[in-house]
Image 1: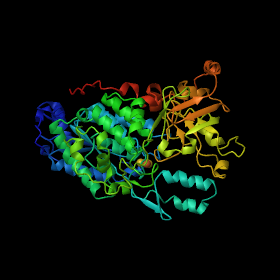
Image 2 (image 1 turned 180 degrees about the vertical axis):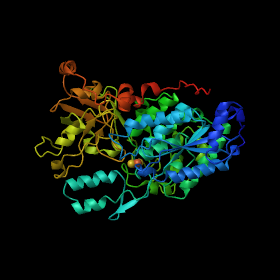
Image 3 (image 1 turned 60 degrees about the horizontal axis):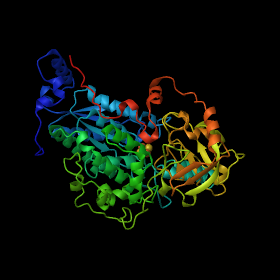
Image 4 (image 1 turned 180 degrees about the horizontal axis):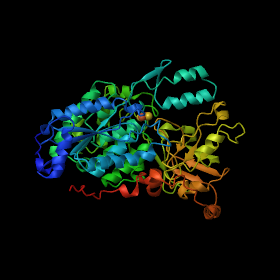
Length: 577
Ligand code: FES
C-alpha cells in the first residue's frame, strides 16, 4: 500500500452497484455470489477489470490467459476483486481487411465495457499492433484508473546463422522467392521460422513501437515494453500490474493525470528515437486526441528533425527485440535521450519518468546507441507536403533507399489493391526501376480502414533484374516491420477527392525528402479540369460497423479516430434503477 492519501470506499463507482439495501444492490451481490464466493470476496474492495484481448486467432496474445491469471493474483494480494472481461482480440495478420478498421471498435468496446460494469480500475492486456492504441484510447475516454500490460515480443529466431525478424524477413524472403533465389522447398521451410513463440513481432514494428510509447506515456510499469513474452519476468509484470492497479484506484490515479502534454511529448520522443513504425504517427494523433492534448503532423515533423534514431533494430537496424531487452530496453534508451524528455511526467507507478529511469544502464551501446553514435542523426519520420498531399503524407527515411530520396519518375497508377494484385507481376506491365508506383482507394474511407498495402510489391520482372526498392505512393499504411521508399498516409485520400485521385499513369511525380516535398508535375489548369470531372467512388459497405466507420472516420493527419469519439467531453455514468 502506498503512502498517498486513500479515497473513501463510498467514492468507488462499484459501490453504486454493490452498496445499500435496495433490490438492485441485492441482486448485484447475489449474482456475484453465483461465482462461488460469498460477499466478503468483493465487499469493501475495489473491483478491477482485467480486459483481455486473448483469442485463438491472435497468436501474439496466446499467453494472455495465463497473464490474466497472474494479474488476478496480484489484484487479490493487494485487496482488490478481479473480474476478467474479454475484448476484441485483433490479431494483426488474421483480421481482414485490416485490424485498423477495428481499432476504434476496440476503443469503443473497452470504454463501454468499463463504463457499463461495476469496475473501479482496469488492467489492460494487449500488444499486437492495434490493441495498444485501441485499449488506451478506450481507457482515456472512460477515465478510470488503468494500467497497460504489453504482451511482450516473441523470441528471436535465426536462419542460416542470421537473425530473422517477424514481418521484415517475410517480405525479404518473398522477394527472393519471386526472384527465383529461394526454392519452393525452402519457402515451405521458411514458413516455420521467424515466429518462434507467442508474443508480438520481434522487430521495431508497430507493436513494439506502440508498447514503448505506452511505457513512455507512463501507462505501464517501468521496463514493461521490452520484456520477452516467454520470460519469467513477464508473468511477474502482470502480477505486479495487478497489485499496482488496486493502489491506483485508492489513489484515484486516472489516465488524465498520466497522459498529459508532457507525457505525449515523451511518447513522441521515444517513437522517433526508436525509429518506430510510421503507423505510430496515426495512433499518437488519435491517443492525443482522446486525451485532449493538441498534436499535429507538424509537431511530429519538428521533433523528428532533432531526435536521433538510437535503436539499432529491424527494420531500420539489424537487431531484434530480445537483444534490445538484454541491452537494457526502454529504460536504457530513455536514459540516453534524457535531455529531450519531460522527466517530471507522472507514471502509473506513482513516480515520475525521471525517477523510473534513475540508474538505468545501457548494457550494449551497439544496440542502444548513444547520441554521439546514432543509427541516424534523424530520419525516423518525414512529413511531406505538396500538391499531391496538401494535408500531409509520411515516410520513414531510415528504412528507405538513399538513392531514391530525391526522385522524379513516371506514375503507374493502380486504382485499388485488387487492381494492383491483378497486374503488378504481369510481364507486359510497362514499368522500370524509375517508375513511381501509385496505389489509391486504400485509405481510411476508400479501403476502408487504411490497410497496410502501402509497401506495394516490386514487379516480378524487376525483382529478377535485381531491383529491390522503388518509390511507392499511396493513401494506405505500411507494416512497421517493412522497409522501402514508401510514401504513405497521403491526405486527403483519393476516396474523398484528394489529389491522389487525379493522378494518371504517365504523369511525372517528384519526391524530394530533404525538402519534404511531394509534387505532381502537371499544370494547375489540367489539375482543375481533372478535379471537376472527379466523381466519388461507390462506398464498399452500406451496413454494419464498416458503414459507421466510413461515415465518421477522420483522415490520417487527424489520427483516423471516429469524429464523435475525439476530445474529452465526459459521458454520464449509467443510471442504476
Ligand atoms: Fe501481432 Fe506483429 S502480428 S505484433
